[in-house]
Image (cartoon, rainbow, N blue to C red; front, top):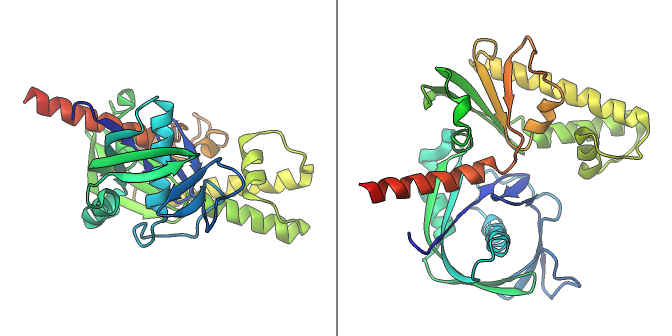
Length: 309
């Protein structure tokens, strides 16, 4: 693997994440060159504005070219950040939920690697010739937790990866996933945002954007009236309580063992589940890039083990 660049990509329903970037999973095609080069991918004679809004839900991410195109944009961003050559060979590493890992692994790998030939594309006006030499896939959530070894000293911990559409759950016993405990709940942040939007519309007749709602949830500056913010925060509190209840109903006792929350929705819990909460003992990891970083670290560890062996 010497000379090859390892790039981790977390293909979320709401956002694409790499070790250094996060951008919405939206993709808008254009027949002709757009007015700006910012976030524009050119591939196969067509133009695409990446990171614009949210895609329709795709439970099978291989059913369209969208996630492949978003992967190219993510790779370009990482190569530019690392000052790497734009003609290069990479090892692409990504993840799948543990609940569907065995079923979808081969299909997703084939979707990403194609025939292994150089992929020619432009991103933000710069040309790339990237050869995806290999694709390594790991269970998402678990890969992120492995970057936080100090949290794994407990004999058993719960991991809750709060993504855009799903919340992926597992219990680790002695740092190893217990396959019988893996669950995927359709209670991700998209559900939270959509419910907040609906409640504001019913109560006040206002149609908020996702960006407005997310800004209030983050505690960012906003000119929205206080009554709007009150509805947003009340619904967010309700979502958190429903999520904690759903985890318990899945057979994972959040009162009996620590719970590690991560993913795009973890920051929401940080404001609403204090460390002394009687319902659970939360460890909240709000770095949205942890999965991507975990994938890269695991490839490095596997490469080191092979070299040692």
